[in-house]
Image 1 (cartoon, rainbow, N blue to C red):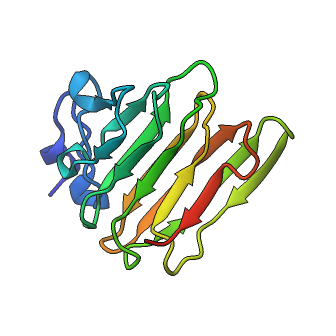
Image 2 (cartoon, rainbow, N blue to C red; image 1 turned 120 degrees about the vertical axis):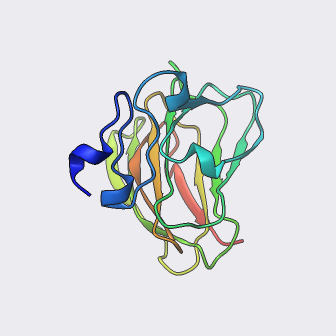
Amino acid sequence: MSWREDVHIGVLRLGKTLGVKQAPVNGPESYVAIAASETAYSVLKENSGKLHILPDLDADCVFSLPTAEDGLRYEFISKGVAADAHDWQFDTGSDTNFYLGGITELDTTAATVKLEVPDGNSNSIMNVLTPDPGSRIQLICDGVNWIIEGMVQSETADAITWADQ
């Protein structure tokens, strides 16, 4: 297939070439707005490629990822204007679908930057503690594991923590 055969107005269609399932690049169908009252959110397979916009949450929220499938991609970003007093938790559902990659953490109180990485063999739960505005996490599935990258700003030292099921 040539690249011209897969061009659509308003839709980024890289999926067949790169193996990443993409969503439309503009309009309300290109993002998912999470409600401030959400405490448990099931990330939907059909929302792969869409930006998930997180408000200043009313309580901690667990984001349950869908069953691992090659090419799933999700991005989460805080739209708050002040530090959120509540945490985000991303759960793959199984220690066999652990995290790979890493997150850059900026401790805004100590003015330090460090790389936070999972153990690479069983950490299937990632906690983001009290994220500041602009914190962003991207998760990409290779069919088994979830590759993570992003940057989290927080006033909390060690704002990224890892756990097994």
